[in-house]
Amino acid sequence: MSADIPSSQSQEMTDNEPGVQNPASTENVPSIPEDESQAEGQVSAPSDQDVDYAEPTDNEQSDENLLTAGTDQAGQDLVMSDQELVTDNEPVPLPIPNELALNFISSIDPKEDFKYLMFSDHLVTVSDTGKELGEFSVSIEPTKYHCKDAFLVHANSHGAVDNVPCGTSITCYVSPQLETLDQQHHEYVKLENCPLDRKTGIIKTEEGFIVNRIITQGQDVQRTSKTWSPESMKGFISEGSNLLLHRLLIEKTLPDDMHFISFDSDANLCDATYRGLNERTQTVQGVELPVIGIERTINSTVDLPTTWQSYFMSDCHLTNRVQVGSPVTMKLAEVPELIERDEEPPKPVFTKQPLNWEEDMQMYSKFLDRKEELKNDHAVYMHHHPELKALLADFLQFLLLRKPADVISFAADYFSAFSTTMPSQSPYLASNASTPFPASRTNTNIEKLKKSR
Image 1 (tube, helix red, strand yellow):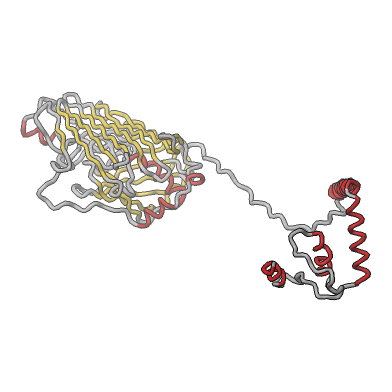
Image 2 (cartoon, rainbow, N blue to C red):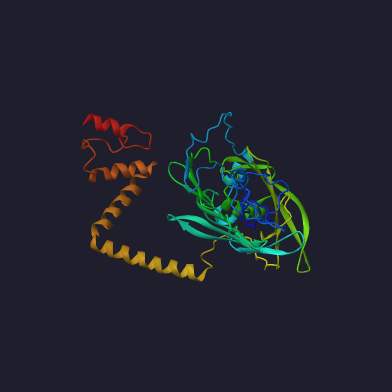
């Protein structure tokens, strides 16, 4: 959340880029640096003293062209590839996120964690004297990106310092895992004779992340393009996803020295550290609000670290944001309406009750209906098959006459005469001969009989 208005000399408008403050990274109006060569990328705005906007000389050009990483002939586009950016110095190893940061991303539950984070924040940017310099707003809403669930993050900051208009805007599509899908970042400072304009685009493709930058200072235009592999961008937090991450950290848990990766002012990958700040109170419209803080530090490999401190209400509304060392601050002007959380009642526990269907009038009625239905169905079947009654009567009479100890074997022997699959027995066998039918499932007599056929 860093949309700030550059100060009298030039303040960065992105969380990592010094020049025009970005709504996603800084929340204050840029301050006047004590040293004009304080950081590469800063843009000088008119101060309270008289300023001569005459065309800069060749020596002065390098001091004023702070937003560019290199200069070319006036009016000529400068395209720099990865090989052209190589210097004589040894390459700096790419930063990597720590395990705590990766575990935090993997623990995100899209259905629950983002439920209460879809709202807008509105703040004002004020100087250290209390003068209002501009406005800042940020909104997050659910959307679709290429038919997949995503979040649309939009931040905007505009204002004027010493009558010099300046501002920044961010439009970013973020996945539920905080991955940047598409981000467009625009910063500007409308100096009278040398307007500055910087546009940075990040697009995720199958090959990786493509970063395109266009920096315009007067008639001088600088263009750069670079592609980062998906492996090198693991744990990457852009300016847009940073806005969503801050709310998510307040919602889930305060960071304990989490290390993600981000871009510095020259779009170089660097370490981004998040840590929690002590709780304090902030007065808004005479109301004291308890707020929770998060500190974000961009540890550039080519410049000094840049730190921002943000404070939030318990419902994740942003109340204050400041860049450490800057005389300007973004503050909440009006107390927002608290976001009500849905209180889910505990799930009821049902104990198993014994079923006594005979005492249940409805179940007993169904039993009687089914009983009559089956009786009628059986009666109709027996009426159409009178041989069934004679067969059963004959078997029962024979059973009572012999009174065998093994009724199952006796029945198998009796009804085998009606089977076409069993071997025929000799009619001269004695009535008390042992039955060839099994008395149990483990009897192998049937298999022997089948082999003897």
